[in-house]
Image 1 (cartoon, helix red, strand yellow):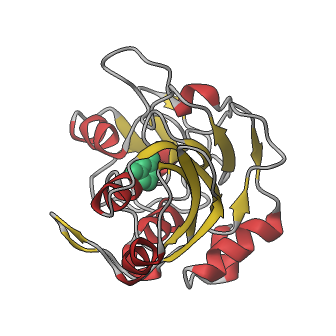
Image 2 (tube, rainbow, N blue to C red):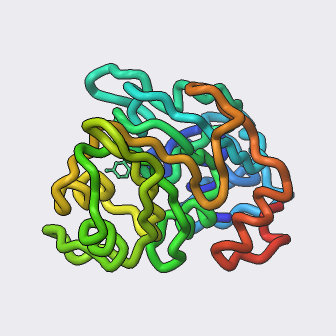
Length: 240
Ligand code: URA
């Protein structure tokens, strides 16, 4: 593992911050100055400012994100963050983003390669949303959502769309997307003239949050991690 990745996983700094520490000569590996290209193995001793840095185990946390919380590690406006909500000893970071007003399933991890693949459109990881929208979407709107709608950053990939509830001034749509562009569900629904009033992600990569209250989180079980790794084509045993 690269030295900056080791330091990031250990919670010392972000990868970029770790690069700064390395450049500043504050990191030693087996007593020698660390370099940006240094690779750290299981037996190597890493120190920052003379203090030993312990290896952190991989961590995978599923959060039921409540509304009003931002999906970043720190917010310039001082709003609460998802990282602050998850009290985990490892420095886990969110995989992808949910808007501040969106609730539901959010995965946080310090497993960089897995996070990278889960967030990459190539792997088409399924994300299931329940969107309360204005009006009552008809067949034409549903067909457009399924086939792809024209947005300013291109046509959306094929998706599943069905109506979960109709009646009154709003309806609830279930949308399953395999990509994750910024504000995608809101923009798609706006494009078919059914603006979103409320948005909840019920499942991310097959992981649901029905058993968690908003704000609650839990660590994934080993078989859930294995399934995630398989979903994006990573070897089973690479997680050690
Ligand atoms: N699409 C949106 O519009 N917002 C989210 O938070 C997630 C998907």
